[in-house]
Amino acid sequence: MADLPTHTIVFEILTRLPAKDVGRSKSVCKQWYALLSTQDFVKIHCSRSVVSSNQRVLLIDDLRCSVRPIISNNNDYGPSSTVTFPFHHQNNDVSILSHLNGLLCVCLNHTYELLLWNPTTTAFKRLSTPDSHGFYINNLDAIGLYVDADDDYKVLHIKRRSGVLGVYVYSREVDSWRNIPFITRQEYLSPHFNWSAGTFCGGTLYFTVCECWIGGTNVVICFDVNSEQFKEISFPPVPSNGMVQGVLVNVKNVLHMFASTGMFEMTIDLWTLQGDYWIKVLSCPPIPPISLSLWCDITHYVTNGNWFVMTKLGKLFTIEMDMKPFECFYPVSWFRGFKGAVFVQTIVSPSI
Image (cartoon, rainbow, N blue to C red; front, side):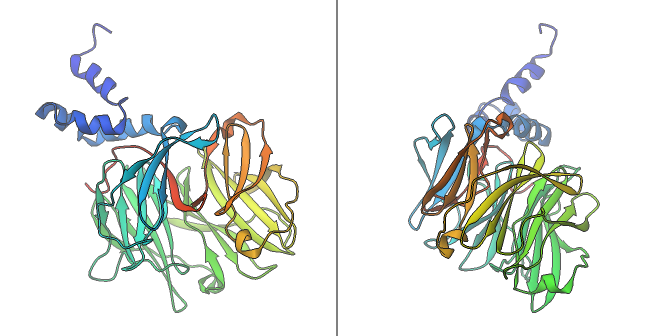
């Protein structure tokens, strides 16, 4: 250790600081400001920050936004801190569409604008342009946030407009949008199909595409972020005699899906993707009949050995698990009545 250069030791120490402490450290001196602003530092700091103990839950209601730590020992939240939106918004106006490495891709519902936002550093970037890129329409569009092999953060925007599909990629590095080709089945362009937000896992963005009708078609669309090629894979082999809902989640760089099926009674299975095929991990017992409004708001999270099936009105079902790899993950958008997202606190910037 004594032989290591001083700047190397300082670098190693600073990459282990919490994100907010890194921000404060930038004011120490010009040398530290320059060091902490390099892309190499940001990348290494981010890799050391993406751990379950650094997860936070962002909660949005009509009047305010707050951030709370997650206490996995008792499946609860810690004390909240209020977050002030750094951009103009209206009540209940901010929708979180995707998140990755501390960045959130959000939509302002009154203007349809897309933004990248780091709630830890408060930095944000508007993605809308005068030529109509970067505007999101709920129930028609799909968004995926990812980082490619060159460490460029990008947004994939799938737009459906009057039966025409447009696919666009925003690059943080060059600060612009471009169109990429995507040929798919014509029926997927119909509003009868619901596209999920993209889930980034192992260099691929995954979207569920589910038909709204009972017994309809359900597939997974895969986007290789480096080759920018699309392909379609099958849904897990779930019964097709009821409603189907698939929720994707990345667990330690392995893709999993909660597949909910049923009509009056509902079953929920947890599947993992191996190659292009789904392997069932576990099932929960059938859930008694619930109202359709709650059925459509089913979300899930696993923490501290318990699997919780949630709706926006609260906990619906719990099943105990003895699976340590699933220590803590939250593929949810509703938290006890709040809109929100789970993210990790990093210094990743929404712009270069």
